[in-house]
Image (cartoon, rainbow, N blue to C red; front, side, top):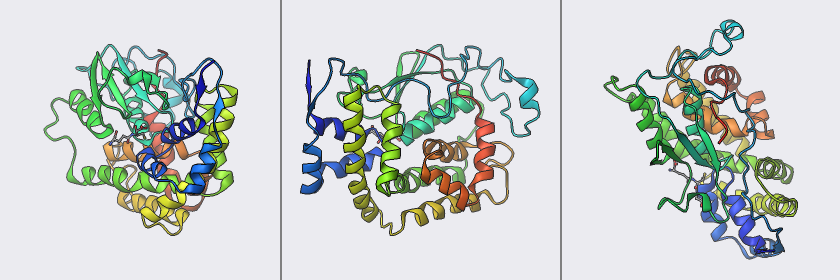
Length: 327
Ligand SMILES: N[C@@H](CCC(=O)N[C@@H](CS)C(=O)NCC(=O)O)C(=O)O
């Protein structure tokens, strides 16, 4: 039996949550009340330290094994043919990596951006869920954040750099990677949109519990770890999210979320996608970070109260099934 410090567990569970970059920093400077709350979480774990995040079925569903990306894109042509926004064959005939492995936290928005890209381009990938407590799965790397993508043994880091590199390999003839406009919106995702998400998904106690239920059930917790991380994490994040609100000058978190997605819908200028008839990298980035919250209360409210729904559904069809394969 190995004793695990509950404070560390909760902190790490939190850092594996949505929009973790800002959260980790805030947890480190948490108030005395939060600290006591976190300290209350000390417990003994079972012998399996386990990953906090499992590599099981993701919320958006894991597609069938897809070893033939680039050759067969319409695996279910009959049903997809009826869908005007179904994914066309996006894969390159020049880029066929043999082994793509994504090291991730299931709910990390940056990881979800990369996953949306891989799914859209039908690049088969395996997932290694990183244990946020000890990060043992990425001990081999000097880089201590996720996502990390290993492509045929070569490490790539930082979601935007990963996407840029893969895009160039898929489209080697393309003279420019993306337009200034597309770049601007991709930056907006990293600098603005991701920061609006945490205050929303931990806005109330019940929403914080819902979010941590998602985080812990998609992880590989023992029963006791799950309970501590779920309730301790939810309580801590409820308070931390209030700090995040202040830090990002948010007064009403839902209003900020609605405003952000309405800004995005305006940027579409009536087109099906920002990329016009097909999604571009800005579409993929926005969709990627919104996908993990879509079925939480904040995501349901977002779809009910803004004009994002139609674009979101088109993106779901365009991105299609996950191209994840089992490790
Ligand atoms: N700019 C990076 C940010 C990556 C990032 O901050 N990832 C968070 C998880 S969402 C992380 O790994 N934080 C450090 C930690 O969990 O210890 C990217 O776009 O990939």
